[in-house]
Image (cartoon, rainbow, N blue to C red):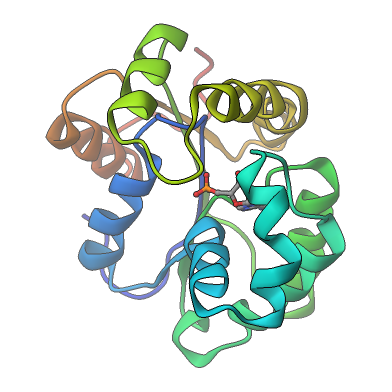
Amino acid sequence: MADGGSARLVLLGPPGSGKGTQAALLSEGLGVPAISTGDMLREAVAEGSELGHRVESVMAAGELVGDELMAELVRERLAKEDAAEGFLLDGYPRTASQVKTLDEILEAGSVSLDHVLFVDAPADVLVERVLARRRADDTEKVIRERLRIYSEKTQPLVESYRSRGLLRDIPGNQTIAEVAASIDAVLSGQTQVGATS
Ligand code: AMP
């Protein structure tokens, strides 16, 4: 495991890939905050804040909250002191526009991403896992919509980050401990970075 406090990471992957679980584990190990935009939005909905009211129906339908609103949310969150030395982004960016926004935020702070960890698993495994952990927004119709939106809007980011040399492929169809070990290998430089899969 890398030393605490300086990793700037994005966790990318479809719903059910296990990236949220890994984000929580990594956050503890690296000593940087795990920033899950989905959790932030769910909290806003639970609190009944103005933001919550604005995003509630979009989330319930499994659709994406608008890029501008997300930009505001992420910009504010990354400006907090606990993210100054590093962070793990889970669930952001999800669109090409969000990639651009993140680039701008990082550039403004003269910092850059270290790795984009792409946790993936076969489609049948994803559906099975998402069904097993059902949340309030996880009706079967909504799950299908979330997977469809992932393929359409988010999957293309994989190749975009790969072409920038930032993408690290992490097989998600393993136990939680095995996925964590694959990530540790990347972070400690044991895995050849840039190797194509
Ligand atoms: P998640 O927990 O990451 O699956 O996010 C749950 C829901 O929050 C998504 O289905 C979206 O409605 C919304 N959401 C989370 N992150 C984003 C984002 N980066 N862009 C747009 N919507 C998001």
